[in-house]
Image 1 (cartoon, one colour):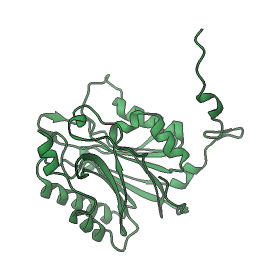
Image 2 (cartoon, helix red, strand yellow):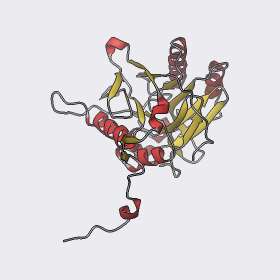
Image 3 (cartoon, one colour):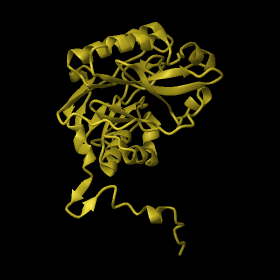
Length: 285
């Protein structure tokens, strides 16, 4: 789904990503944790705030009953409180939550501004034990028009599938917000975690900004990558979150530049695609 076109400001957009450490099983605590993070971001004049996947519930559920107990709907009072917090601003918040879908649960992300919940995206590619609790979404990720530019939304493992960021880029996204919970995995010394390399490649391949917000803390023995990063349209990291930055990445971006896909006087990143060939079978020689 693509929202109606809205011209972005030609000036700077401040993006704030904060690595939170939700307490699995403590919905009330996590809701306040999110609201506090948004208050901090507002105090720094944030235009776009990106928070982790499943920020209101935690991630490592014991069973489906626990996940359901921690689920909320987009009509929950929490989203009303968040909307009120954004009143009088043009700030936009993207965060993950465990969605009560009635007979099923979804790993979802909401886009919220002063007008309320603008969009809800249900994660379409579920990772590992998520398949025990959640149903994959059945609709393509949205692109939401905001005063700052067009924001696409993916969740964590979605980013591993090149078709997802490419579809958002061709739908006009300037920035892709990616709430995530990246379990820590070994990687060679001196190298960035593979998830960040993947995000950099997606940004470069599609000429879009990408803001990934990971989480912090240890949950039921699970340690996280803490790989929060904001990446520019050329694939370079512009900000990361570390303990030295209080687990926050703050950066100023010119999102409208993502609409220029030219690579040279003779090349355009999207127009140079050979879509007439991509559906063909490769010859087996």
